[in-house]
Image 1 (tube, rainbow, N blue to C red):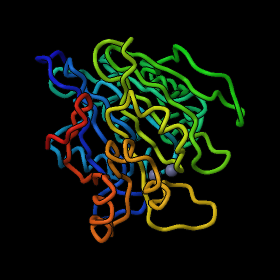
Image 2: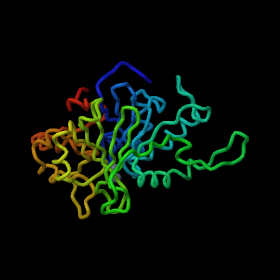
Image 3: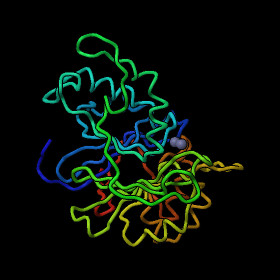
Image 4: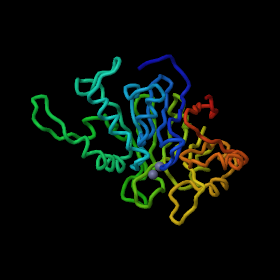
Length: 292
Ligand SMILES: [Zn+2]
Ligand SMILES: [Zn+2]
């Protein structure tokens, strides 16, 4: 899939929260400077979002998953089956020897992805017709971690890092539903791995001012899930806490995974320096500017 070199970008297919009807569930596309395209998360509306964008599963090299909730993974079965059974353009079906899409996810998340998908993906046949037992690797090329940090508060590793082609990403344990494997993403931007620059993606996470402030000098953009609804045991980025982040962080922050009434809050958001993600928006991950 080698195209002319281009800026590294992120395009929103779905920009709404778990129960959004207006903005769609989470699925975004990263395009690397060599033209390779990856998806971040694959929510329940992803198959239709991608179709509506005039694209198909064969356009993507890989998939990154932050955590297992329906609004982040329920599109995966469509991805797996379509690539496994069908050829499109130059991309041959996996069943006929074509490439599997790659997958990057923290090992604790991978376990839950398989728990969710096994009843659909487990049942396959060998070429002689005998029954076999599929695994996630039957459908996706699972990328092994190349680094990470040992467990802290939870039993799984605090962070795991991955590299595949020009994609470099660290999946870091975040605080979403207590005890549940869930990660934020530090996505390497620029072609030089040594410069340390990243774009940051919250997945679903409560606000961690210490982490965000520490990352800010080398971060082009923070994409943060957000909510205006507070409740005991908050599991998302509550706006009143996001509003208290340093201005340097807020100016780089794009609010996503928001509720359907986000336009009611636009003025307050923009006054504090935030930008709002909508489906179809495209960001340049090097300059931090929105380009579409
Ligand atoms: Zn979510
Ligand atoms: Zn979630």
